[in-house]
Length: 193
Image (cartoon, rainbow, N blue to C red):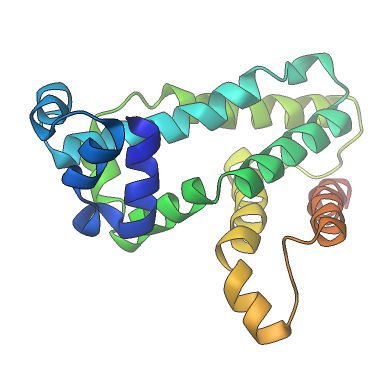
């Protein structure tokens, strides 16, 4: 049900998403959806929280503390990049939530630990990198998270406008590979500057 809700809300947003459509596609009733989630907004919040947990769980499974700092950061960046590339609905949902000033996330009351774990993962990599003299610049882990996220998000969210303006297909395999390497090189270069 949350998969279908993700498709519906990432296409139409909370206001335009229809519980009828979700019920029809999941072969359930609106009554059951409201029973489990309380409301349309409850369903929307459940899928937002699920989307955020999904990327953090993926990161946790990487066991980055077992890798050298630069390699760990490259693996993290590559994983984030590939996740966003494979899940444009996640990118659209995040952007829809930003359009609404994170109003629904602020009301969610969801568990903030998965988000903190993502920042703690980056902080650990940065600290190890400084201690091992791999990185020379002290950096705020949230800034590094933002740097990674913004590049990965931007190219997915703006795929069609860039394609239209610059006549460039951002989903072309060679471009994807070039961008994956470019963001990792940019972050590592910043930390070694």
